View (cartoon, rainbow, N blue to C red):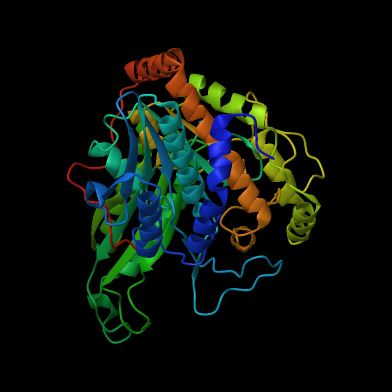
Length: 471
């Protein structure tokens, strides 16, 4: 049954095409900056829908922009389509079963994210044409959100300079406004250089780069007691120096992900991590070099846009899940722990219930536990007034970045949640285009926040996007 609002009918008119796009991208999981086929699918869909397309924006081969309309405000709707390593999984089953020969999978739902965002942009394009109103809608295909921070590079280089408002979403267990809090991050590689030698016959001649990495890790672990409680530091070995234990390892590289509540706190904490690396090099008589791979800022709120998006969700009501959707969600939940389910409710600040799928709209003033991740949407939010929705696409309790998440990426429930949030985003875009006062209030709020805390892009000047990054 068609919804009474014209913009939602435009979404419904194209829903089947974009559900198919989402499923095709699910079938071709690609990692940071390697989303060649997924980007091609999005570019082809933009052309088929009549957008004016620019490929390879900001020198990133898998980034693109499609624009429609003339004059008026510019509304950007942001999409993503990158996958995650190690999360291959067959679709629609409730046991862990990786697909043969594959390692990556859409364990964060970005197949849905990109297709849903492009569906919303297409509906706004059609609405503008039908109404004959000034205004432009742009779909930005943004690769490498999972650590590559493509949007941060794009913001630094002025890609969003003439945008008035940005709208996006992310799959979740509930239909809600994304509470505009996230952690600023820097991704840094530390490479230690020492001296190889025979580990038994001449150990005194060697200087172990692996020892330096291990000492650095110990030092950072001791630092954890003395850093802000909402900060996070993670690490992974990129190169442990080889597999021969009878050789003193002459080189080793460790990757650090440093997170903090805001950019000043991030830069301070990253400097402390660098000093620990220097200390480890001093203790082992090795040398160390570091480089920033990518970075993201924390999210900036925009209450006028959040209120407008929430109003659209309230008019829509929860997604139209049926008994079969709920039955499959219950089967997924049988693979989870009670802690998983309780934690999902707490993160959104809602009472714990037995509902397997979202059956309500989370109140705008709900405040969940502050267990924050990071997103390069943060940098867009400093560049232009930005709002994000959470679309209810999977069983409540499903951990992000899990095989259960990948398994649900092509379900009817995921499709319904994607179309539902596309309606909310498209409706918000129309609100901005029809209401100059809403746009003015969104811009005024944004300007006031920047006046208090000016934006400084967290990327070093001249750093190129890490198109060949690992993972």
